[in-house]
Image (cartoon, rainbow, N blue to C red):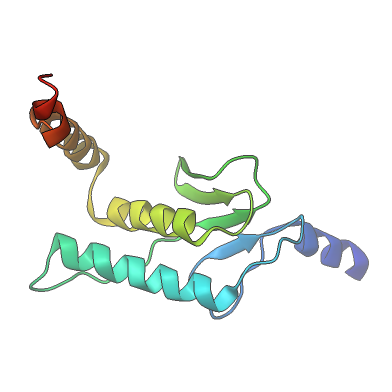
Length: 135
């Protein structure tokens, strides 16, 4: 029975005590726990300050970091969220944590609105190169 329990916990998601997120690493990919933790807290702090500079909210998005995934992506399935990385990638991890943190304070309509506004803003601007070429 103890062997069965240890096999199930080995195959499943591990919660490292110092990390605010869970980790699934079935392919035993190398990754720097300390760097991941620093990136997580820095990303949450930046999003909080961007949203409310005068009194930033405390953001602590919960998700499962999955190492050895097919693609680098941030996924939300129902109430659970996953950050999937092929291999450890600090930039991709930071991007995903920013998205996860923003989701804590912005509802899906606000996120969609921000995305539309960003796209409209980008389409409404013209680059200097385009002006020089007469586009």
